[in-house]
Image (cartoon, rainbow, N blue to C red):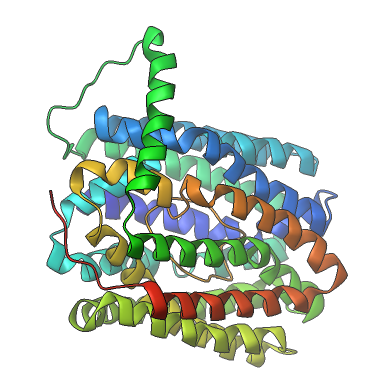
Length: 415
């Protein structure tokens, strides 16, 4: 966990600088809001093809080498973003980047194996809070850089920073991480590739059949939430800068405040989640998220957006440890790679700084809904921007109802 947290610091800062402004980069390279949606739909499509195999490998072949190799490859995909002179190149880079996610299930399983059940709420909270605290200045730094250099030159610098940080993280991981999987099968030959693919996808079907009722309810809640995030996520910054009239520096300052409040609350929230129950925390947090979504859709000034972001920070501080630990508690150690490939890490958050949906939170179960949401988001925003946040509110309401009716506090499973 110490090694993963250190490398997460590098990733949080570089992603926190570039990702909040990714949609504006697409528009600056000649894209439209529809192009933004299309680009964001390509990563989950690639995830759908590769993540089931990644989960199988994480449980059978070991985790550390998968993590390091994939992180190296991810670093070099950012060359597409650095060298892009039109938005279609970004689309290619996003698809290839989505193919190189076979470290996410392995990393999620490694984290789950490293945390004792009674400390998972605080463990996931700490893993999020410490790197986030270091990277809190990143969006403001990036916004100032964009206002100074211009959108395209600044974004190329920010993606170069991503490349360097990922390469450094991979080197640290390869040197210092230790595998938690006992006696992994380390050799995979090309002759094994076809049966490996068949077994991986057959295993994926078995995982879906295995899911208990409460985990299926959580899956439905995550599906609604991730789909809404896919629709709305890329357009927070577009709406903030082009409709409300904020500068890139203004937006960076707002993201800084949002992140600082969330990080300050995350560890206390993790303690409260462990003490009072993950299910209760998840339901209350989802319901509370309705307030900032409502306020942002009606914002007309910096102060309006600030209010909505502070409220969103409070909700996110509890959502992260509640959802992640709730899911981890229900999954046996021997199946964590495969189940977390299906469902991701369960890190549910409604972020105005993500630029879209992706990362270890998104498993292949959510790939198709996220793809559809990403594509629809661009078209809906072009017709009626406010409609996106109305849809997100409806999805949140449905998630609260499902959680109350079907979700149960799990019995911890470790074998």
